[in-house]
Length: 210
Image (cartoon, rainbow, N blue to C red; front, side, top):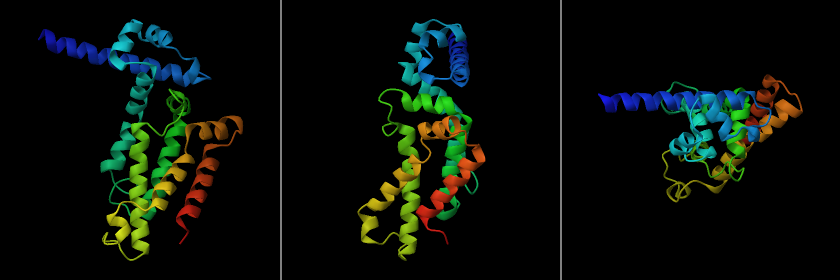
């Protein structure tokens, strides 16, 4: 019973920390200015607790980000079309990129904080590799279908994804980078619908309008 209560307390403390960090990032003009001391104070815990639970500031930011994006990931993995796996690739690719963009527009400061953490590059992050892999595979399926090899019998498919699919997935995701989203929505003052429309037009150009 004592062990179960300790686990429940630890879970509540974790949720309190994540909520406090999320709120601080949302209110801050610059994600870099939010310190572990401030998060600990807002959550009512010692700074040592944060380091024990999350490792470092980047680990804490990643935990907040993962909690926020989990519903979207679930929709992509098991939800209905157009985000879910049952959707045709040509329909699913634009829907996935629009969903990523909308998430970053709705969570601008948190997304920017994650990209700015560490080296500032998103490419080594697990979540980036996950999105890239999904897009690359969908683009590869489109490539195979266009070549009449949707069954995967092409030599290029057997050897792995075509280089152009791998690069195209990177290029498409680059259009949703948090620093670009922040620049467009913040510095340039573009409204969300205009940014979404421009991304949709860019994706259509990359995929080739039918």
